[in-house]
Image 1 (cartoon, rainbow, N blue to C red):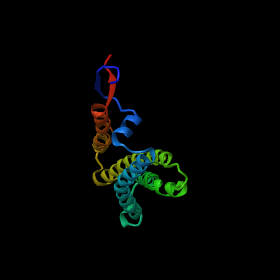
Image 2: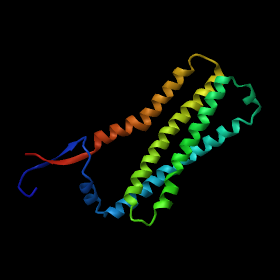
Image 3: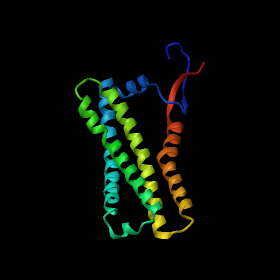
Image 4: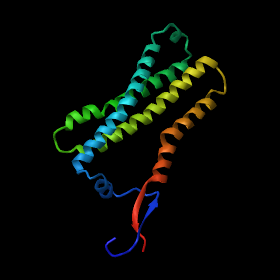
Length: 180
């Protein structure tokens, strides 16, 4: 430090945006481009999965077994399809969003909004997966342990998709502070 004080790294705090940008030596525009490309790569993975799941869900209504579902199972199915449709919409949304705002020098804002849509899409995907699993296990087993099993799977999703990333972010992100 310029005044001779000692700087030390403190874990569990996020570096200021300016510090991170300086460390990477990228402009705000370059940072927005990088973040956009990273987000698009992440979305590609999620989009593929949600689109396959949604396509499968749509086809179920045209199978002979669909006519034998109870009223409760039909409601769960309809809920699952609607959740799948909304998850698909939210995960695809960043693409047309980008088309509408492209060339207007607002990529940093587009990245923020696309990230929000992606997060919403992933939350809806968890709900879709939960509902689909619940329906499938209800139809396949007719057993009282199904809600417990689905609850365990949801806990696993939340641990992998939320708790672990938040813990890693908290644990390994550092910032430099003045030691005085």
